[in-house]
View 1 (cartoon, helix red, strand yellow):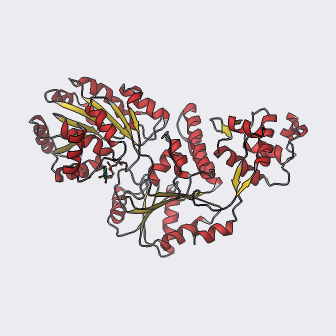
View 2 (cartoon, protein in one colour):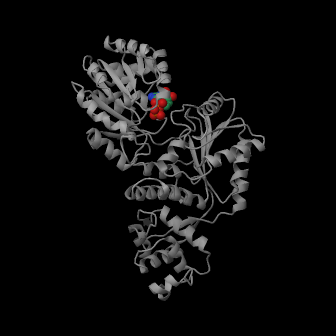
Length: 518
Ligand code: ADP
């Protein structure tokens, strides 16, 4: 069956081979196994249902929340000679009737619908008069309350599937690979965890970097000017910041567009079009920009602020280099921004359990900024891809600073945490290590510990950074919640026993970073 699939891939799509994972997914679907496909943005999810749709008898229904994208997808399929159509609120009633008739007379192999369509019983009744072979659920994370884009209408999908006889094969697709989301999709759609295919999260052409301790305005100005012929996106955390950065660039003679939810739809569309058609090269935007935008030649994505979690970061950064050409993804880290994200979580309407969960995810994002290991590998491990190898091109892989042995310092920190019974957070631990006269230290009797003041020749900032590093490298594990307690991991115990050493890149000079980036 895979041979037939490959023929279709070549004939209709003009590609020679399936990408890693695509063949496994297609094989499973053709064997009738309900499947969850987890692939990054740009990984090639569409092919995974478009090719089987051409092999299976009857029609394939694609459920997607991205109404604005349906027309493009259907147009592209029609141009390739694949009969497809869509039904959503954007078409007139008479057009809808015409399309429904076409569906009834088996004119189409693919039908795209928005999840809201499932609310109409007449629609499901109609489908029972034809053969529905497959249901593909795009952006399947929308079914999970743990995902970043929960949509209640997705909860209707299960009932919809059950109402169609005989039961079609299900393919749920998403780029979100956290454990909870994966479990939720499987649980809510009744798909075996064994049938989850997680693949291709590595994007070889993306070069990840983290920039710290810099004048960010100056950095983006210089970076954009240096890459003035390339397209790029600058993501900022708030609308206000987008407006400010947009004006700043304008003042510096850089033509940019902007995009955030506070603008009128007309302005947003205009800016987006200008960017898509390369009339302007830079887009300054909040995370509202990009969902479903398929601009292939984005050469860089700069994050002015830290995003709220790794999923959001990888999705936004992943908008770079969709054409496979090397592209840079640079995150500008400033510790203060973490508080903004924490504040946003705190102020949100999520319940306490959910907030704790979000703090935990933010912390993993912060650790990404502090890791000295390969960024790409960190990301892949975060998403649960096994056996990820170092990318050899990210900011850390190409960092030529020499490694210095910091085992002794690490032991000081770790033993202090142990002596404090692993019950406190970073700030307090730092105070004990640097010998602060804080009353709370006395009240716990920590001023009597042998590790009290053991690092008093360092600044609190330096000790904080060392703790961040030890957390990022897995020696310390913070508990969930807004005020995490740091726990020692097995790796830390080995260091305390003198069984392994800790090494770190020598400290970087701020001046040096600015020069390196010029
Ligand atoms: P996703 O939905 O996962 O974000 P798409 O399905 O839009 O990704 O695919 C991203 C790009 O990769 C598209 O331009 C698509 O045509 C291309 N693509 C997909 N599969 C292959 C393949 N096997 N060989 C080459 N290009 C592919």
